[in-house]
Length: 377
Image (cartoon, rainbow, N blue to C red; front, side, top):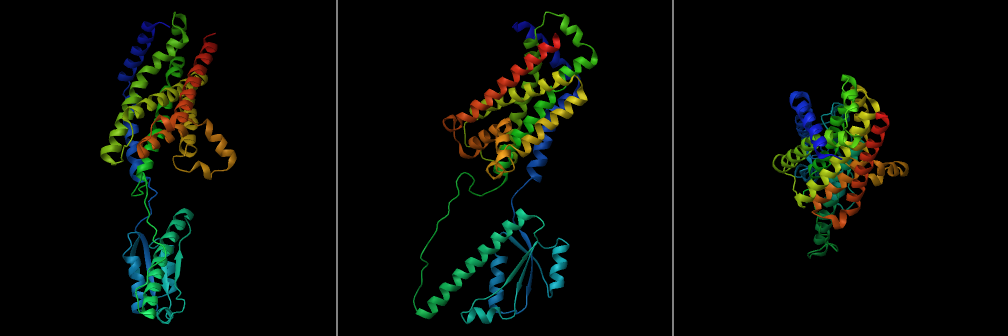
């Protein structure tokens, strides 16, 4: 390959990008916009759950139980209701996600040593959120039960009672359990995959539509030289996007970056090379800008969003889908980003993902060269 020819193609493509402001907007502004929107709007945290209470007894015991919910950061008491009709209306209107109903005999049962009963009604429209809310309710009830049992035992025996087990919990890598700490790194992979493929999916197709490809074919320029020359300007834009995304994660979303920054950008470069080559391959095959952009969106966004482990745990997917995720390159980049960002690990634990990512990039680049040769012929 001739370096001068590659540089000439890269320079030509760079001039086109500068003159076409839409390409610059797509390449730089859209990733920033998507990262901002998704970073703020996409959250899996469930806190300040709206709560309504129907306290039928109005006793000290029931008020003590209710205070456990009011003191929890996971619940926000909206109002007190007086009938089941009001409970149903509040949940139907979305005013409350959970309703706590305490019967008249709650205090009598608790104080006499019998089992006190209370009812928690949860809106199950969103099953995942309802499951989390039920876990919160059970935690509050369990803590109340434990404190009440210790108090009653101490009152009966006349001495201090200790619990038989003191479980100390400690969360590693994401101590505050904030969803943004693992959503933002995953978003970087998804957005880079989509933008990179869409940028290069228009390059060769544009040459065919404008009629300049025949002139390119008539020159001594070889297929690999054309492809590499066209990839270089977009590779620079992609790396700039990675830098901007890392800075936004650090200063805007305050996501901790515990790993090696050089390793992060090195793996991003490998991933970008594969994603850009995939877009180039789509452009070569389709020969039409509209079709190329549509196909690039389908091939990149849906698999990267759904099958990369960014949003949904791969181990919970059906076996057939789990096998299918192995051909999604974003899966390996998401794993690399989360390992570098949250755990601060290096290639000693992430070598397999790095190798598979490099293999993907190499295969797609070779495929683009082979297909383009056929088109030249």
